[in-house]
Image 1 (cartoon, rainbow, N blue to C red):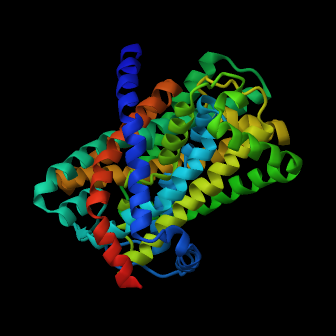
Image 2 (image 1 turned 60 degrees about the vertical axis):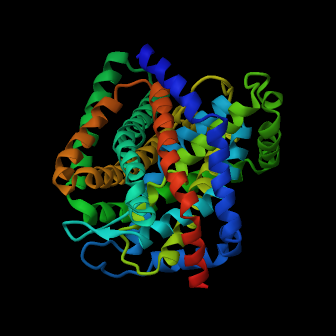
Length: 457
């Protein structure tokens, strides 16, 4: 594990170095300028469009899911442990200012994800089973032509590798952390008991994930549309309660975030002395959470029962706003308002967020937080299971789908027994590697996005 951590650290430093930050921000700015900042200019229309269509109940055509199921599947993958454990990790390593850089990346990311979803619907195709399939590998192949096929293959290969860490192992690890924290908050338990219980939980999650995934696109969408609204409501209500009970501390906390964004050590007492560490953690955790620039969310949207790419693209704006600007911000305020003795500079995860809730509500809140965490993580696992399946299908066809789903499901057992820090670091690295081919495609296809926007009026 030490060797793996050492190699990954070197690769991660390169992938998430200054060039990566420039590319992510640069492509977001390019798309924003070329679309006349559609994420702000059409924000009201996007919210009206997305809310209206989300709750318009109808049966989807064969090989598709409803717009509501599509957005829930995408949100299932984005609204996950990145919102709870990821934000906690960013604050612990990068300081409160990391939240500010999350916001900045999200404001640009709204346009980036809008472009991804729009292109995915525009360049999608039918697979051998009659389902709509799309995403970065398809808009690279169909939008840029065969000479760019290698770039599409690279993205798909990275996608298959990434889902095991980002979409599965880290999510299960966060569930384990939440459950263990809840148990320990009531009474001490032995390490042997926790190890056995964690293994049992991992096996249980693996079986449930397998049951959902083998049911195909319709079952994934059906589970997501029921689970996502339920889990989001619980978490939002609990978070709002923390803010309402501590309204007098909200301005102070907001000030910590702004001050920490540019002078991290002034807020953390010197534990976080690097401005770049603050920016890096904020941007990388933001992308880990909302997936803007990663391109994966567009895979779910490509299956939507919709004809107009722009209308579906509005969901990309909505998702990043809901995921990062709303939910991640709530997590940050819960940690900074309710958290005590944050060990800046040391790795942290869900236990930091749960600690924020329990300091306000009492130890019983750890149970509710653990339940929310389990729902968040499980939804992310099934969402990313779809992404991995589509990436593998692009490479070898649909014949390997079922076998991949079973293997993917049982990675949950591994995730239940690994170290948190290494898991997050590896997930960060794979995320960064996936961003590269997707950003190249978005840059080259930005003109297509502009044409589609103008055509829609």
